[in-house]
Amino acid sequence: MNNLANIKLIVTDLDGTVLEHGQLANDIDQEVLLKAAKQNIAVTIATGQSWHSAKPRADFFDIKDHLDLVIVANGAMISKASKYEPLYHSAIDAVIVKKVFEKMTTMDICVLAFYLKNQHVYWNGVPLRAESLIERNWIDKFIVEDLSNQDNFEYKDVIQMMIFVPEEQENEFNSWLKTEGLYNYINSMKSNIESMPIYEFINVEASKGNAIKKLAKMINVDINEIVIFGDNMNDISMFTEIPNSVAMGNAVEPIKEIAKYITDTNKNAGVGKFITQHILKKEK
Image (tube, rainbow, N blue to C red):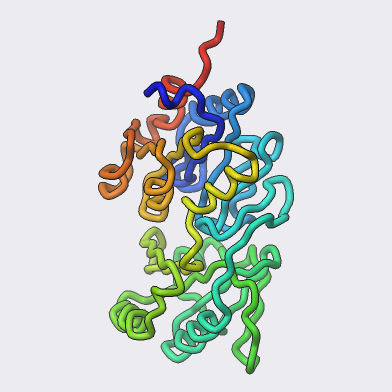
């Protein structure tokens, strides 16, 4: 593992990697990542969350105080960590967004679209039926703009769409996506963490892997001087684009199969253990 001796950038996923249900997964990772930053190794996160949700998690690792850049929306945006200031974004074509909104409204399926105005989302007017999110008042942290009565709306600068699809409508939903050929224009990620399936769409050219390469150019770091950590399918582009890839012990099998290295689980401080053993300079 000699090629890990000159790492200049550490990029980690959040939940399932250094977090567990939004909180620190162990007592070691935070200390180790802060130690890496003190050794002039840039540390940041790459998450599927919006900037507003990612900000307090980035603060766990004082990212605002050193690198001050975070990757959010599964790679569709790079923003400063200290304040909402997008330095890069990849928007979904407005024609595609409009088509999705119209079809989901017809199917009585809730869709939210995050765009460049911080904490603001477009909504098609169909009630959110994900009980787990309703119980947590999840939607209340956003400023929701109801577009159900607006004709000829221009869906500009949409970074990410979330579609809350009841299980009994999934087959119809997926069939429509394929029939319309939308996979030529969007990347789709499905999550079953909540009480109903949630599909997230971003521009087909956006991914965590591509965003990391863009960030590396911003800070003048070579791709071989980067190490990434992840656990789930929305991390797969990091593992295909970045040579030094580390899968968590709790990662899904497709991630483990393509990872260069495998570490311990998130609860057992896999990130901290790997960095301590292979990347940090030994204290004299």
